[in-house]
Image 1 (cartoon, rainbow, N blue to C red):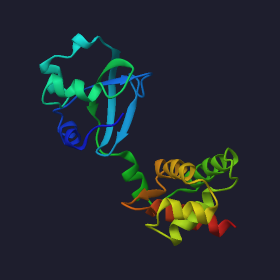
Image 2 (image 1 turned 180 degrees about the horizontal axis):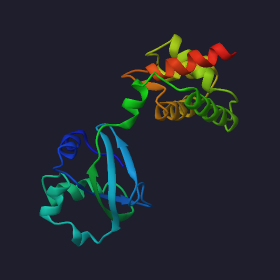
Image 3 (image 1 turned 45 degrees about the vertical axis):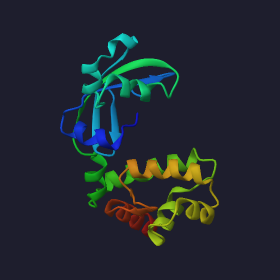
Length: 194
């Protein structure tokens, strides 16, 4: 579920807590969370609604200047109309995680086991250590260039690096990636074991 940049700050400030989307099936669910560019959103309710649910007032509550402007956006996609109620839940928890470079022995075992699982389920074999290693050597390099060097599909690599980011091991830059302090600790410990 994406939001326009001009609505993101209003969400952070608590002025926008409502959205409408047309979906073939919802991409969020009641009780779930959503990571966005501004942080974490808690999804309070996802409900199928008729178009009559949208009024001038609810359009403005969802961050649009008018009902017409909201429908102009909604009509770009087919699907069922959903109303989503949510609230801002704070900063992205991955930020604190990636800055935490102190990793206990038990935590390190858990991280390495998870990385091994990612490797085992991959069509490219053991990719996690190689990927962390190349990001360490070549920060801020385009995903396409990293993929070519690793001999991995670019789109697959981008999705997979997101999994490393969710573990607090990498950070996205304007172009490319870099290891987080936590990622450097994990890679260093991993190399020492080899």
